[in-house]
Structure formats: structure tokens, C-alpha cells
Image (cartoon, rainbow, N blue to C red; front, side, top):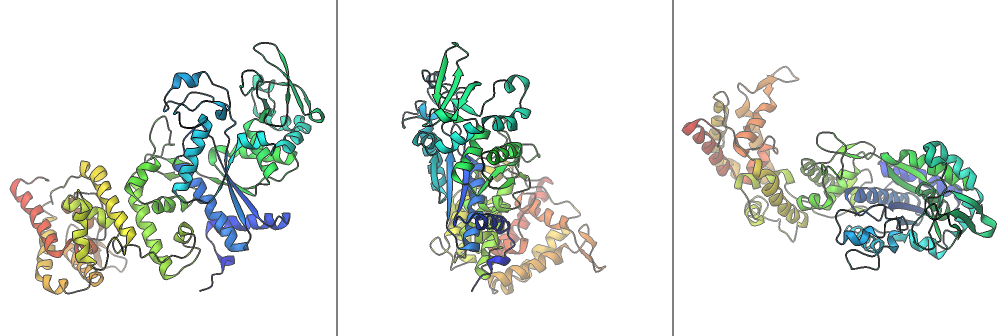
Length: 539
């Protein structure tokens, strides 16, 4: 089946078309994508999002044009160590190296030649964990090897023009000392933020004074003897490498504008950019590392597969997202639905096409993640095998070998139930007004038990769902439908979840009954009503 990529409407293709126009105009014959990192911190969930989204645009570009691409993962590891991190050993030792490039700071963990190399290794391991294709680039290596020399000399020639871009954004004190060049102190090794007395590009020389000693120094512009201040450094990188596309967060909008202007001052064209929104917590507040109100990538991957995190990142990247535990099950099931659609109709407007890098034969899962979690809740599952007992009856052809995604979801469902659901699970009693509907449901299931059990799972789930609706067609669950007749309100299903499952919400109930078992569901209803008969309170 041929795919018309030119007609694709998915946002990665919209971005890819912009890159295609740029590359066509430049006649380069390939596109360079970039993502950047600060090496003093550890990779996090936002790192995954930026690389995944950039990768989707890259793949869309390749599908659209057939041209080769590269993705450079650039670490600004020549940046000076500004403060001692709280989460490392040997903090006292690190305090003696403040201000030095992180690749010139000893590794507090004692495993690599420097702190920068240690964090770079963790970054690469993080990217490799998810199978991203990239070229790793070290700022220290690029500066010291001379790859930035020509661009640095160009910046020296345009020194005052670069300063004119940045100075209006600075306070009076910093304005008097600002230079895009940060020389490396020849004695202390510290990355210096000092004004330049002279910039002599023809002599490859910066002249500056150490404010602590009054000593005058001459530092080479090239060869890794200085680096650029970070906004200028970003522009320098774009100019030197010819970057075609780079994403960044909303918090860097102003920096992107300034770096773009500097890139043009140098004689280059800034890359196509995309601004993604930042994450919020469940209350709508900005996520802060210091507050700890976010969700880590390890927490997500403990409760759900990485494809679900990719699904979460794919959806509307230009809108702020609430990132908390409750979004995980929805993201899993949305991915599962898209995976089913992709098998039936492989096309690039499906998020799963981008997550998998094209069509896939992955069989997916015969039951939703929400269904598995509710089953785990009802049976108080503390081991995956407890869920498999029900799954073998419901879907005899499914196993860990034939349905690897299902096997992973079973493990995740047990973990999510144990950690996130069980501590807060609380059944409520059915009210006197609700009780007749529960009794009617149990009676109808009992009366049609043999007939229902003879049906295939899908047909059985639909038939049970009809019975569930019929049982709820009574007060207090009636409400006017669009056709004017009385229908069943959402309150009936909320009551089912709260009374029988001990949760505020749940799956399509007919499907749950088919998975859990009709006789077992009758037992759930009878037990719930018996508890109420005994003391009139929730269990």
C-alpha cells in the first residue's frame, strides 16, 4: 500500500515541510537536526520529549523528501560549573572547582575522567535506552579541536554588532562588562565573565584584565582557549554547523530570538524552530525540581511502557500538559487504540506511525490497560499470574510470547494497582435508591448466564453492556436523551465503579464483566449488597 506523504496532516509532517523548503533553498542535499543539553544536570522526562519530537520531524522529513538527515545531540560541557549539585558525592571536593568547565572538573563519582564526561555518559545511556539515532557532540571537543575556530573569528570581527544585540536585555551593571567571549583563565582554568579591553581577530587575540588581581591577559580566540556566552554560543553553533531544525521550550522564547539575531549578524540563517509548551502538575502549577511536584521518567516507566510516554509527548506539543500519575492510564490506552488503528490502516496521520517509525505488525493487546487495572483492583492482584488466570479464559490465544505488549501491561497494571490504587481504594455502599438497579443487574445476569457464556468475548461484552443499560433504566439514573426518550445517566456507571470496584471511574462495564466473569460479577454485586445489609456502610 503506497502512502501519500505529501498529503499527511500530522504535525511532524507540517514541521518537515518547513525544513524541506529550507534545505531546497540551500541546496545542501541533507538536513541537520539538533538537540542541546546542559551537562551539569541529569536527563529527565523533558529530555525524552524533545528528542522524541525532533526524531518524529526528522523521520517525516526523510519520508517526505528521501534526503539523508543527521541528528546531533550537543552537550554544552565547556560551560563553567556554577554550583555544587545536591545529588552527588564528594561535594566538598567539587566546591574547589567552581567556575571551571565541567570537563575540567574531577568526577565526584570516580568513574570517568571528569564530571562532564560522567554526565555525558549518562546522557548517551539515556538516549540509547530508547533507541534514538543520534551523533553525540561535546562542546569541549568542538572548541578544542578547532571546529568552531572560523565561527569564533567571525564573531570577533562582528564583536560590537553582537554586543548591540544583547546589551539592551541586560541590567546596567552587566551591560558594562558584557562580551560574547568568555576566556578561560590561563592560571585558574575558570571560565571568566569579564569585559574585553581589546578584540583582535586578525591576531587571534582577546585582551582582558583579571578583576581579582589586576593582571592583564592575552588569550587566543581559537583552539578552546575561550568559549562563547550561552546565547552567543547557541548562535555560534547554528552558524558553524549549519543547523536546519531545533526545538526549544517556551521558557527559551526570548533566548531563541536573541540567538537568531546573532546568527544573522554572523552571516548565517537561524534554523527552523518549534516552541513546545512546558509541563504542569495536576493542579495546573508549573513543575519545579525544587518543589518535587513533577513526575520522573523512571516513575512513568515503572507504571507504563515507553510507547505510552511517546504518545503523551506526541499530543499537541504546543499546548501545556498536566503531568501526573493519573494521565498514565489514559496515555496507555490511547496508544493501544492508535496501534490497533495503525494495523488496520497504516498511515502517517496516526501517532503510532511516528512512535514506531512506520507501519507495524505488533498485535497489541486484546484488553485495555484500564481494564487490566480494574481487574487487578477487584481481585487485589499482587502478582501478574493472577491476571493471566482471567486473561487465558477471556482470550485463550493470547500469551506473553504472542502478545508481548499485553505481557508488559500486565506487569505495569499490577504495579500501578499496588502503589497507586490499593492505598486509596474505598468501596461505598449503594444508596437505597440505587439498590434496585444493582439487584436488577444481578438478576438479569443470572437469568442469562448460560446464553451469555456461549458467546465469543466481543459479542458477550456487547450483550452484557445492553443488560447493564437496561438495569440502569430506572430512578435515580434516568435522564432525557437527545431523541426525547429517557436514557441512562453517567451516574449509574459511576455507582457501579464506586460500589463494586472501589474507584471513581472505570472501563466499559460490559467488557469488564466479560473479562472478570459473569458469575464472579454476580458475586461482586451480592457481596456489596450483603455488606450493606450487615451494617449499612461501605466496606
